[in-house]
Amino acid sequence: MSEPVADVTGRRGPCHRRFLSLLVLALCWSGPASATPVPWEVSWCGTNRLGVAISDAVHRRHERQLARERAVRGAAAIAPRASRSGNVAVLVDDGGLVVPPDAFDLEGGGVQFTSSRRGVRIAVAEGALDGELGGKVTLGDDESLPVEFADGFRFPFFGHTYSGMFLNSDGNLTFEEPEAQSDRELGTFLSGPPRIAPFFADLNPETAPEDGGVYLRRAADRVVVTWRAVPGFGTNERNTFQVTLLGDGEVRFAYETVRSRNAVVGVSPGRDSKLDLLDFSSELPAASGRSAVAERFGTTARIDEFRIAQAFFAKFADAFDHLIVFADFPLDLGGGFAYELGAKNEIGGIGLSQIDYSADFGSHGRLRAFVMMSSLSHFPDDPDETFLGTNSTMDVLGQEAGHRWLAHLHFRDTDGKVSDALLGRDLAHWSFLHDTLASDMEGNEIADEGGGRFETVAATERYSPLDQYAMGLIPASAVPPFFYVTGAGDIRPERHPEVGVAFTGQRRDVTIEDVIAVEGEREPPSTAAPKAFKMAFVLIELQGKSPSRASLAKLDRIRRRWESYFHEATDFRGSVDTRLLKR
Image (cartoon, rainbow, N blue to C red; front, side):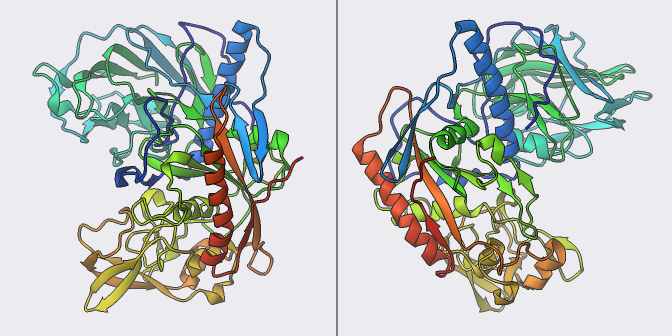
């Protein structure tokens, strides 16, 4: 991929920082490895349709950081140590596979964004807050307030001109619509509405002191919004910062005291925009195209998926569809348990855009998916033991490997409109209310008991016929009709699969023809699509460490069981070969 960030010429302050986040993804270096069983609260899959774009931006910034550090130290590049244990690849970190935390360091400083038809310029700004705060507004936790600008004031932003905005309690402004997501990560920052985020974090103005809260000043030449001593949700960490909008499109952030440490700072055109990640302390001034520009501050580290894959392919053959990666050290995915990054998709008709990041992963067009399976210690010794809600290790791996094809299908409803009612969380998993016959891609097997009464009777056990169609294993003619339920009260589509949940609602039947009417025919069709796949299992280890025999044996058990599980879960139509091949 080309490097879109240019004009990185200035330098201010030390460079000991770095970005965190693939939505909800992070590495944790403190404390012992988690023991099983893992709490249900951390069972979320972190896969997101923008994940690979975010990871690519993380990687590009990480490469610049490593280049600066080498220039300072006069050190040459050091390759990770790659070896094999049977059919498991082992990569020992060289100091470049892990991206260090990015501690917030803008207190007393500021950032300025100036937009033009060619893009955005970013520069250091004065950190002093405008003393004219205006009036205090009533804004509760996770609330938004529509704001009309003063007469005559208009604000240009990424090619559009606005006469008003939404003031959101969580440290940001949006245009066109209020913030509707509870996630304050880069995925929301990119996919939501156009956004200005001086400190996009989980803040609660309701718990601010009497003279604190959110203040708004609307003038003929500017809009000023100040978060004054606003705590992070559920904490006493008070934060004071300000954003100013000027009529020429200039945006200024200023920071006084900031105690919360996890936030996105930047501007975004929204609507699935591209992303440039910068270090606002060491890479300004800078220029970007019409992309979102941000820095993600956090207290934990994360891995660089691209460098891991590149290190793998430097030693082993470029002959794999999936890389399945585990860590041999404590790993905290910040609420997510595992995730998949799509490296390449050339398939049509499955609801996914066609992309090709394979070269960035070090592959010459073969790699399709990078799967991060968390810390090996999070998984039980028995790969078939249920330990995570309704999931075994095989079910978790079934979902993450399945994300190469699934689950993104829309359909034509009875009104002739495009519907996403089959989809649940992040529009990348099946809905709780979709009878998926217990697909690993979430959803449930739902028994229709008549009279509008339903109950979930199984979950996360297999790949359904609809799954297998999208995977290219069966033709459309082999997919029977299926259904979902509407009007189920407080049963949300995003809910995790669960057996034994009874609810009422209205059944809605769907056919594969309804799906094809929106997505088009699968291309290539099942007659030409591969049925056998090669997947490599990789264990990453900390710098200076070596994996134990127990860890290697455990991962090898998972690897061997995965071959038979995949065959069974696809009704013996698909197969996986996990044998490791050298270059």
